[in-house]
Amino acid sequence: MVHPTDENLVYAATPSGLYRTTDTGQNWTNLGNPGLRAVRLYPEFPDTILVGGDSGVFISTNSGHDWSSLNAGLDGRKVNCLEFAVTDEIGLFAGTNGGATYLYSFTTGISTPPKSVVKTQPLVVCPNPTPGHLMVLWNESLKPPLLLRIWDVSGRMVWSSLETVNGQLNLVLPNNIRTGVYYLELTNTSERVSTKIMITR
Image (cartoon, rainbow, N blue to C red):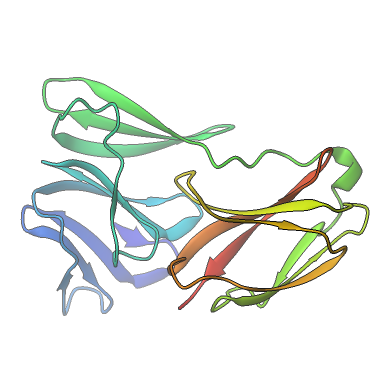
């Protein structure tokens, strides 16, 4: 699997694990997870990797440094192939031993903001990518109190905070939010805005 914006970066699923090369195959690094048969990069988030094999499906949101299981509902089956289906939502099909195909639906808790707050940039984060120290700016029509939440691409909320400020907030995110791509969301009782952020540690 070739990275969509870096042709030198390639991932290979093998029985010995997931391998990565950053120099078009001259050198390879084993990222773990033995018994693999398939690898896919999450649409529009190429630093999020999904692999399938003897132990099911696993996801990494930080280029293979850490892994989490996505095996709920797979019934312990070995996975032979993976493929994304992108419609209004993103789904991951897993072809398994025995002929069964399973579908995993990614839900992030993010929905389209109401028209009243949809402007050119209703929510801005800077710097983005961020090492974890960031400024969040939003349209002041989004009145406090505000619930700020951060979700990873598999739909897990990794951080939340109730805020009473209006229009601007300086944040220092905890170190347990690792490198990767996330959604940052602000909501009150009637409105919601969200944006993608990249965290680099």
